[in-house]
Image (tube, rainbow, N blue to C red):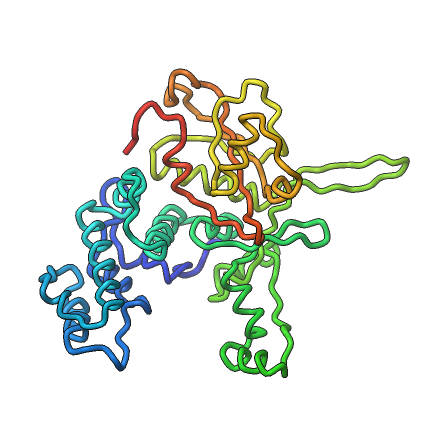
Length: 357
């Protein structure tokens, strides 16, 4: 179903404009949205200099800020928050587009802004990339690229739930701050329900403001026990892993201009395994150990959410020494069952002959 309004309104996408390449150009309205983050909000203790600086930025989000105006902010934490914001804003403006800023920042190897700003940029980039998307599973899968997910196993299904949304629902039983107070007093138990996103309820994803409450089914294969000790295994055509694969393909195409095809796989049985990319810290370490022939204990292997095989549509776009070879990807949880996918890994670590874009 086609979304009937601007899904992900908090991405700031409608406040940005596209250049001829289709990349996002920062605007006053977008920078003002970022300025509204709680870390930069005024508090009763804010000094006159902080109030004046905040007012100046609200009126002229892209305007120059004299060093003395920043130094005059009395609270050290507030002063640092504004300094970080200005460094981030100035980096965006210097790069010209959000895409160029993200690539430059990640390729520099010196990320000097907090994760909240990086996630905000990725959020907007994905909203741009998904403009016109009609597949709610793909949109939900794209959330993995900028929102940590809690992975649970339930009745044979591997389900990804938005970590922050699930934690909030657990703490408040779905009743907001009043629910939190009741939970703390012991007067209320968690009753909030979440849904697994399916084609049957996909329309709700586009229409609700609580889309982060939807679970994504990452089960790649269904197992059915037959008679005589036989087992039937079927690959799910509508797995969330398939949707994530399509999102990652579009991510590479949009950011690098390279066409790839990605599919979930169960194992790597390639005696000529040449290249791999971990999509998160845990998967990177796991794949490195497997590649080097080291023994990996069962507990770490259980954290593996999925493996993927990536193939370039045009092998000539690969490094000559691995042209035509598959690239293996991995996604894993940490010890607490949390997935923190790092979309920059796929941009930085593919076997390209030289930087693209």
